[in-house]
Length: 163
Image (cartoon, rainbow, N blue to C red; front, side, top):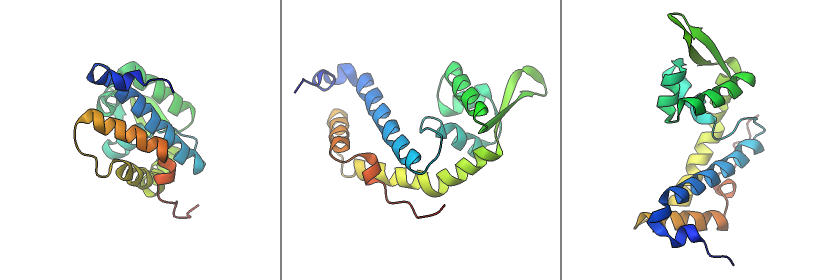
């Protein structure tokens, strides 16, 4: 087996370690979302949750609230507008700014997320991280090991049977 150099280099590669763990968690969350038959990704759901929680926002405010760069937010928002999940209109006071809001489809996806997806993912991640203690690198390694042993979708409680 090839050496895991990211683990071997420890804190020197913390950013890479966190990135690969984040990518793995998002990929496994996508599996849970796809099993429900939804055409949205884990990386897009925070935008919907943010707009549900805070209401319509400018693109800059949305990027700040989600914690991403404005170009990254613009790409995601444009994709979600194209899917009919979000609506973006020019701001009444400044045509250069866009106001982003949930569409009816976006509100439907938030309702499904809130009722079915988000609780399952929160429970699965809670199970994954249960009893972790100690230095951060040991915890990251334990999370990665646990994901190899039992993927997030298998940790998520079964859906409630709603359709």
